[in-house]
Length: 601
Image (cartoon, rainbow, N blue to C red):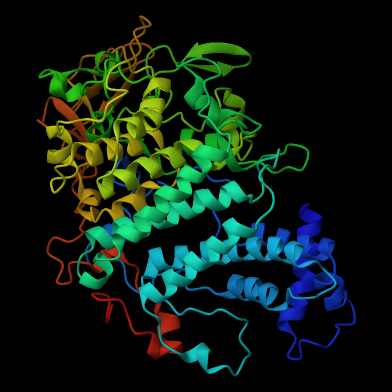
């Protein structure tokens, strides 16, 4: 299939690059050979899967999010550091390729319903292209046809968000109505259900964005229509798609199994980036998540880990002792997805075919909450881009949460809706309480630490569930944007509680001491096998980024000496909800204007 993609890309880009599009290039097939046969249409649309704007087989897309502490503070979150010179993403080549197909897919030699199937696929990718542009830049030019080199649209300004998003909705509606395939056993291509899943994602983003970003009252008044579309698209899959959350392997393994399986779990995964060892199509999940030098050394914050419920369905933070609970205790009796997301308890890795205990490793983690969701247990895969697990792009759990959130935002979520969505996901996590009726009390931990403007218990709990269920799947930053919760990006990067210095801790209760924290001189004699972490305020005359919150005890904190900014102290409060137009592109076409707050920098 890769060879087919390359062939059609060369062929079709040759067409698109010709000044006279009816001229047949000497070394490529004629236009009718592509657009006059179903085989040609299929080959052309297959080329779309390799486009740059699509998520690839990567598990690091949440690296910039509110719930991960990483090696370095992103420049985008530092005051006065990020400028339009550093911005990127204003690329349009892929759009021309899609538009060229849409413009030319009209040969009557191919039956109309067949043409519409492939047009539906093309318009799905155009919707995807534009949704990514709108999320990143806001207003963008809508270009619905391939432009000639002298077309004035090349130097026109941007169209309003509502114009672009109405066109995106028209594209995804066409895709849902016309894509024929409802099942791809490989889970690697776009089907009708993938299109509906993406429609639910698009419409939920746009509906909540318009609801919470109320600077434009006209857009705010249209939020409900988008949320209705999100709910109806998700419901179509729920009622007719035949999907279900994976329960094979029991509550203690069925969640993580979705992310470590070589073959996509067909019951739950709608589409995936599939690895293939024979074709050397692999991913780097282990390398990125276990290396102390290659990845971002990303670890969850304690503030987020605290949101995982207890097994009885009550908030962990209802326990007054939670603030000083040590790691080995705080991970017990919790939603079983926690132990399938981070190293804890009886988690083991495989070295040379032998299982070995694997507590958090402080040569990697800054907070103690070390992710395992995407990693394979065998250490063989740690040494490069060797992973053979498939990377889910759309899965049924997200569809359920899109439906629940849209209904909650509309105020129409019922107990039956709750049981069929959040209740199902929490059941898989081993939770026993609160599964059949929607919540009636707002959790003060969520309102204090995450969503102070939200009083509706259902909205709060759906957001909690979304964070937990979809963690590390590349959706969190988009959620923060649409909820208008950018200030979460400035939260303290905190880690597990350390009761005292110079006291080795057994993190997984296997009888082996794992880590100790000290200041000044490393304790001597050192305990064999213990990793010692220096939490002195300064090391070698330089500020130490890893400290204890209370000096000699308390939560670990990481890199909080580097301020992160969002709305606070910014002259334009909405500034960071969009990236600036890259300077080079703005200079080429000043009619684009610049996003508010980014002018002159």
